Image 1 (spheres, rainbow, N blue to C red):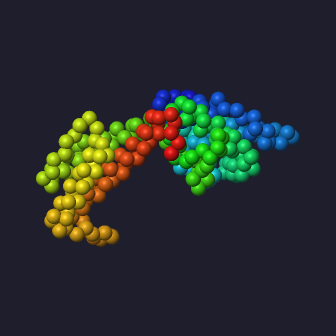
Image 2: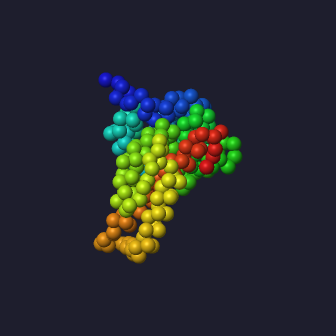
Image 3: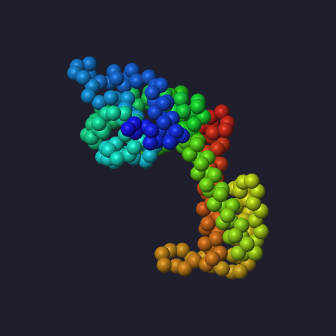
Length: 241
C-alpha cells in the first residue's frame, strides 16, 4: 500500500513536498565530495529537516524516531530507509552549513509567492532569512484558517453564556472580533472594581467565577489577535512581520 494514500489531500506535507521538488539543489550536491557515492538522498534529508522544523522537532534523535513512526515523515522519505540520528546530524552540521541560506531562501520565496505562509522572522536582504534562535518558523494559511474557524465556533457558544452569567449582553454576529472581546473585557474589569473583588494568583488559590471568566476572555482575545496578525500577513503583498 502506498503510504501517500493515507495522508489527506490538503495536508501541509503535500504542499511542502511539491514545493521542495521544484527547488534547485545543485549547491547542496556540490557540497558533497566528488569521490565515492552519496548513500542518502540529500534532497530527502533536507525535506526531513524542514518538516521537522515545521513540526517543532529539532533534535536529530527526535527526527530519527519521527522518520520511523510518523506517516508524514515516511511519505517524504519515499521508499528510503529512515536515516539514523548520526546521519541527520552530519548532514545538518557538515553538508548543509554552506548552502542553508540558498535553500531556505528558495523555499521561503516559493511559499511566499504562493501565499501559503506568514513569516514570523524577517528578511535582512534578498535571500537570507534571519532565524529566531536559529529556528525557522512557518505559519500555514490553511491551518490558520481552520484553527480560527474552530475558535470562532467555540467562542460563539461560550462567550454569550459567560457574559449573561454576569448580567451583560454580548451580540454575536458573523464573526467575533478582537474589538468585541476587548469591550467585554473592559466591562468585566469594571464589574470587578464595582464589586470590589480581589483576584488571586498562585497555586492552590481559589479563583472567583468573575476572575475565571475574565481570564477566559483574555485568552480568547490573545488567540484571535494572533489569527488576525496571521491573516493580515497573508492578505497584503506578502507583508513581512
